[in-house]
Length: 125
Image (tube, rainbow, N blue to C red; front, side, top):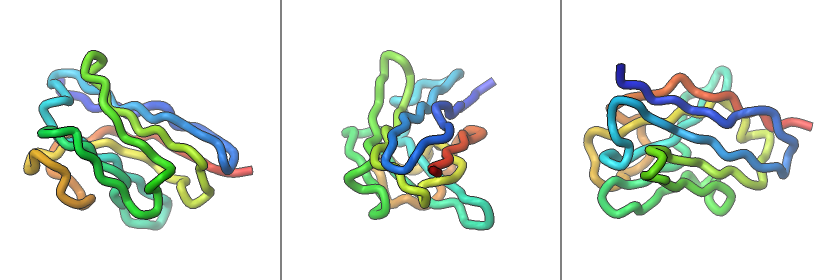
């Protein structure tokens, strides 16, 4: 019954923008530190961003810093990833996850918690 769902992916041209959403049923997202991850075909899943439970502090991979923004809307029980200035190398399946182990973001390693099914982001001309 507990479900974490990503949405907002799609096909976009280089330089374009997308906003991904992570929503939950069965629990409240603001109780958790939340991470965004992505995986391209044939590659390992990698951390993209994190937003802390405790103080809302954020963390970004160097590859997306300055282009992506993670945020919360607690009224909607949602976490967002605003992606601007998209590059082809941003292509992949994007996942959100809860972190059961940290009150504040502590790196971008894979999290122990609930994971969604992913949403496809394709950046191409």
